[in-house]
Image (cartoon, rainbow, N blue to C red; front, side, top):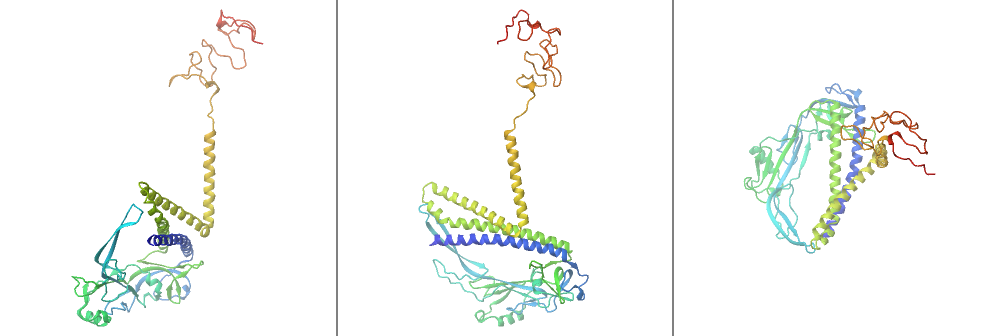
Length: 455
């Protein structure tokens, strides 16, 4: 059953990684096109002191001080408030946590021993799962969810800020404020019934509430809550003006687009930062998708790996080979998904890269074939001629120096050799006696007889 569950989870991870890779390529193209279109359409809004109707429905670049009059309050703890654009709550619970440690046997691939270890820890959510060797006695004094409240009247000068823009204002800080006894008592009275009955609410530090008997000695069920806020301040934005409100702008492709940054930033710099962020996000999701695909395939073949562990000596090697194969196949599959997505979302670029790749393969193939079948050329006078020592003139057939390239070769005793097609000269520049093919003696070879030419 556990093997089947592992395989099913692996299939889910593999399909999830594949879908993530495909979606990421489409998202990257859509965001990139929206950034390029925004670069052509954006105009500077000279001032936010008053609403200018002439900029209505336009994508504008503006900067100024983002502020709120009412501030923001936590809906669960009424005594927690901040003069800012947003207020975030984060809760932790003191719970008993089970840790499972397993050792696999090499015989049959089954789990030989499973041990369980228990510890009390601060965790981001209550532990409700059943334990293996003991009952789960976890409880919480108060159910507290993570939540964020936003200022409803946030504005940039005379223009109101849409909630979508307020959510993206950066610069979150820890809420640095203590809680007096009166505030704590008021919040204590507002707590749900399961957290009442004793003094449970404490101020455990700047911007932190503690629900429990003693913050210095936590018990199972205790809760600590931390608060963070986004302060007011100068921001720069790219957004659409709509009836005196800054809201997200829609590109022609339907992509919602806006930018918000802290401080005074030029539109060109904000757009360049958006491009860089898009590239980083693209590659991060590519790596994540590839990892999910590879891990998913490894989990799919996990039952086979467990069976191979039963083979003495070869079990470990086979399991390693399966893991390597799953990783390679998952990586190759990720490349295929990205390539097909490029054909879908970037057809022109995909075709151009395909043509370039084919041309490169053809060029390399031709170069390799030419180099393989090319015969090195040699000068006719150098074929079969012994060469002299390094740095000296090459030697002729009988040890005489070989004439330099471009000059007439020397005869046996240094006299010039007749050019090709002319009669050779004798020892003193005279023609040798006897015609070609007749008996005669060459002056250089007196005393020797030259027989008739074989008919």
